Amino acid sequence: MYSKLLKTLMLTSSLVWAGSAMAAKPVGITPNMMDATVSHGGKSVKIMRDQNNKAVVNPAFAKTSRPCPPFCIQPIVLAPGVETLGENEIIDYLVRLSKGDKSILVVDSRTPDWVQKGTIPGAVNIPWTALNPAKGADPISIGEIMEDRFGAKSLEGLWDYSDAKTLVMFCNGMWCGQSPNNIKNLLKFGYPAHKIKWYRGGMQNWSNLGLTTAKPAS
Image (cartoon, rainbow, N blue to C red; front, top):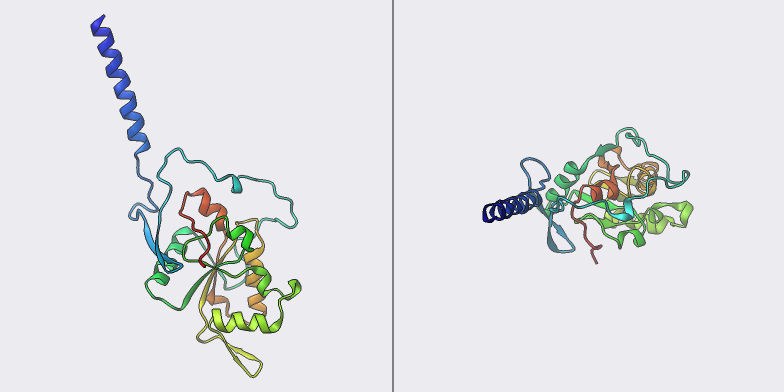
């Protein structure tokens, strides 16, 4: 009787230990990178993946069948010369930006209601509507964004992009047209394609990988 009870206790302890060990397995970003520290709103934020091995998809990004149009699947190559990025490349740009590289700007192109739910740390919000004349954006306000935020220079009606920033743009994911809209409008304004980068996976992929999000910087 005692022997049987002891075996039961040992088996239970082993199962508990095994369960704890499984839950404790680390979740890195890459085999050689556990986390990355970036600057967001003047504060340091550590980007890492959710360490709960049982974490599931954020319900905000669980919907599979948004109606198309307008929520149609975007191509891998959005426009000639515009590079499509993944999560590791986004993190690299964020780290470089946080270390003082002023030639980079990471842009969340979504509308503020979406951004309030969480954004990529280090990103600033410039809604797609702010660069879209069809949505009421006027030439003066667009010009202010181009000069004040992007570093372009207006010269007698022409744009000089020699010192313009490299823009890393994203929105909600591969079905979202907000950052593609921003990018296509910038190309119409003459912004150099090689200075525009696109994170196609957007917040859907970022969230599904359990990566850190933050409230928009004030």
